[in-house]
Image (tube, rainbow, N blue to C red; front, side, top):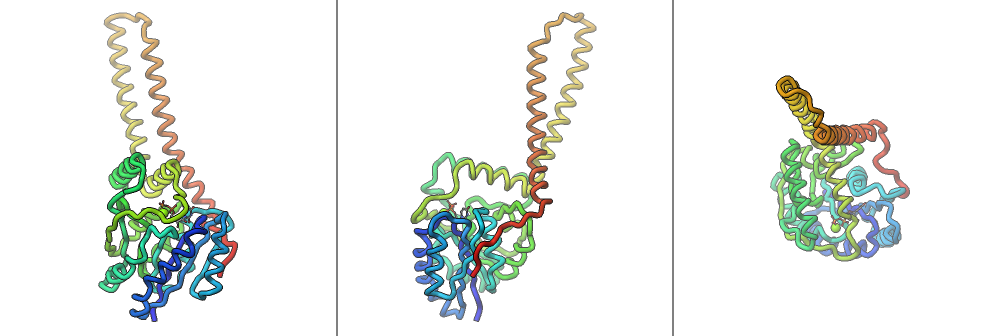
Length: 309
Ligand code: UDP
Ligand code: MG
């Protein structure tokens, strides 16, 4: 008998817990045929609603249900890490509680693992049901990210992913505090099969991602998997030095030929504003990396457990 761990991060998903469980079991006959057992690991990410109670109810009727609840909201990335740590399976799959990751895809995904792939990932090909402005920024993010980082981050990739134990252990070996999972998946490598499907809108409840949360998350992704912004800052600095040098020569020559009528005030103010702006901007970039380093060296735990069964 093999064991498959289904990892479900949940944050305020009281309406979805039961539906998800039913839907998963509806699609599990395939695994029974293949002699694969299933364990369900719900990670309660500090929910403020009745999510934990719902999970306890499931546990009362099904021993295969497990839960780890956090002392507060640590974010989905932490929940994924905790789930992978708790998973005992020979394979693990990450799924959202909101049924946006259809369990009906699991047999096909497993087929590819049987064929020898190490992990099977999914990406949505449409962004149906999403505000256009958000889609625009998302596309731009992936374009920039892939240009400045060696780690491949796939546009539209979801966290819905079936992995072998080997891949799970590789991800667990990455113990960094700033966990940008989409980058981590790319970084560990292994043979990955991509499946595509149309975006499915969430069944109940609402998304936990606001525009600004996503924006901050994208910056996190960039600092976590690329140091190109630092190089850009240095290059801009060098460029301004060269410009200043040329300008000095021009002014000296001009003064020697035409004398020194003091009429440079407005241009001086413009130059000071521009240069100080560029300086602050570059300092900000350095600060981003510094703050990430600061959080990293503190070695704080990625999550804290309140309840575990
Ligand atoms: N989630 C979580 N912690 C958070 C935010 C979200 O565990 O801080 C879970 C959430 O319960 C869901 C999954 O991550 O199962 C995806 O969240 P959501 O559906 O809000 O994201 P979207 O699908 O809109 O990208
Ligand atoms: Mg969702």
